[in-house]
Picture 1 (cartoon, one colour):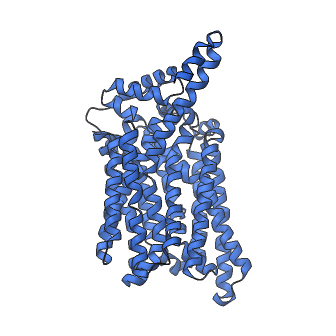
Picture 2 (cartoon, rainbow, N blue to C red; picture 1 turned 180 degrees about the vertical axis):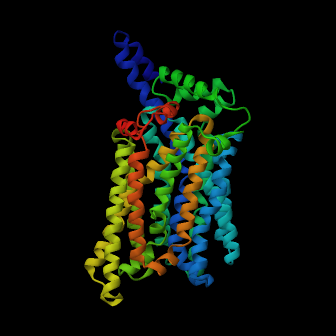
Picture 3 (cartoon, rainbow, N blue to C red; picture 1 turned 90 degrees about the horizontal axis):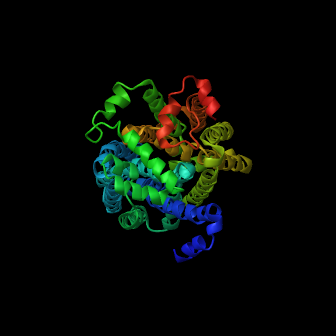
Length: 496
């Protein structure tokens, strides 16, 4: 701070040019720290999704469960997390975004201990229930808080952090699977789940010590001085902090008394045309993110790699680690392009890449089926692995991170917490349905037929993104209602 004062005093003749430079990074760095801490809660979802990929191989042999029981075990957490996602909206309006994050980490910690201590299938399902509630809370609150703490100039960049940390969790889960696969069968999968109890402890401490409450929630509670102090630290300039405060106060003036009373009616039963369009956009983007089958590709990747010709647990889990690295790398690429290129272009590129990757994977697996299991070639194996990695890259550069960014920024303040909960709930239901039916589906229509179906769904998603999602890059959160109030599909395209 002293060095900053000296600079200011010694450059009074060039005040505008030099005063701005030191202040902007300092304030953005605080928003960065807050967003990082909030987004770290998403690690628990990514870890759980990925750790089941390897743990399921050992659980099925150790507990002697069927494919159907395994499907239910893997997918049921998505339905459990739906409870947490829907409850988190009201909870976060009641006790605040910050304390809701602390709840999420505590619940997931408890679930991880229960899963790691499970002695039978029923006990393990109880642990999945508790962990699922925690995942649901984390899934909803991280993007809401990050969107509300971020200045408009960096919101796209900062709001990708939840998806980045989901992928950090995914990569950690794959590495855990690979590293612990050499342990005895009855120990390995339990240790995999127990490792998942470590991140919640660290996140809890960071949130409690460092992170402030959301300025928008503080305004909703009438705590204007605290909100102004937070905005002063997270805005690019004092002028922007004052403008953001006035915009939030104006939006909060429309808020009904009573922490969410009447919100669900306005969202679902009697929405205005603008709110209806926002709900369709949020629910639609979440639907297509999961309906395209990405969670099932990750969760059942060992089966896909086995079909392509990779044998042995260690090799299949090693291929999954490579998949996790690709996802994480391309999420980081998306982070740096989101506020430069915009949401719509990346979404369309992403969906297009997924369509081509699914078609390549499905065609290769179909050729393997026609040749017979004993005639797998190295070329088919190489194309299958390349198609899976291309699929992960395409998803991670657009549809993966943008789904959470977009749905968290388009709802007006009075509807934001419950609106994001609705999107997250849709996301988890679709994920649960697909993960609980993937094995049965590919047995019915073949694994190649399943991926041809995924390609078709991704193609429908591409047209949905093109016609229904306007560009939101550079818009303040309080401008979104006006943006979605514009009539006609063509106006949405012009915004791009």
